[in-house]
Image (cartoon, rainbow, N blue to C red):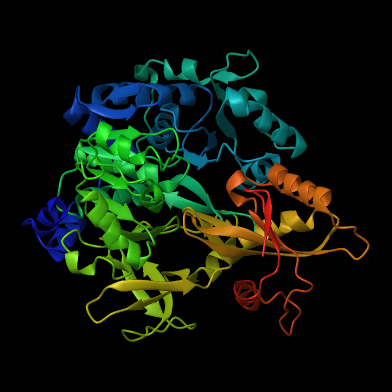
Length: 547
């Protein structure tokens, strides 16, 4: 079998690869990585946004990135400037990110699906000075700026596909002569590159302060930890999340080609793999739910990363598609953290996340941060060069997130005698839907802002396709006449104030919510009750009631 031949191919052992990766110096900054890779890659294609037919070579990358950097510099973007970028998966997104990095400025990636309420928070919290968006989302941006009284003047709004006189044109900035760029000389590893917002568990998202070192090491680790070359890499998730960003840097290190989809699709995924002869990808479990095809095993995958896959499905994926699927673990705060070595064939279906990546140390500790012996369940803590510097403007949250220099993941793990780590649960009150971390408190805040709602709790609902869906448990006000139109109003209220992936799918109306002695909702008891009881629930997607 192809997958077994790949897994047993002779390569240096993981410990040797780790030493090699950590001992070789990183590029000085993003600008140096772009410059060196562009000179080495020449006329080779760097990326192919195949659904919008946007293709760029390595040589063109240098011209475009440094030219856009010069354009942004000409309108006032400089080292340390905070630039919001609200773009879908189009080539302008990574071009803008790299140009921001060249200047030593800071990108705030923003989900184009955000509504005004969410956008107001991110722009205000991050102290964004400029924003780059597209014509389709310009209305949301301008509404949020007005409603939130945010001090971003029209001249600091850069728009893709809109040449109105009161806004900057991203296309015009891209056309700036790169010779006009005055490259800052003091940009180093510890300068910020991103304020990346992540849901966490405290309601509104927190901005992770991620440095140039974070991204340079993340790209390098993924490029070389398997001891193999990946010439053709797929990015199918949104660029405003961390994965496509490190996939791009991985590609630059490998001098490969990144193929980028407009959005994730389970039904088209394997066609992309075959059409573009992909060798490395992040494989969504939803692919296994697609009808079987005679061409399933006709692929060139060398390694497919999977995340949190059910152990009983792991071998099934490998055998159906004849590929090496290997677990990995990471978080926005700490980047790529664990991986399963490609040669660890015996660990398929074990449920293990793997071993620590280069640049990362991992421990299992108790509540006081004391390391626990192998086999004992405790919280995973992680440290290493390049992890987040902290949460922007949130010193208390930053302090609570660390035991000394060890970052507290909030995830429960155990480690076996061989050194493999296994995730067993979460300390954090969040819901993980199709790879998205959704803070329960943010969903609950929106539910409670609907006046007929007295109490609300958001909890995870197991789902075969997406891992978890959001279930809203609602107690109405005493004087409310609950009916289907009222429920529909609640759903519309959620859709107006939450990104689509956060909107609860299921709505349950228990007679009461279990409480702790301090009067807080006892989530663990509520989840147990919803698992064992048969309360009627409304499924927003199918528009049906179930028991």
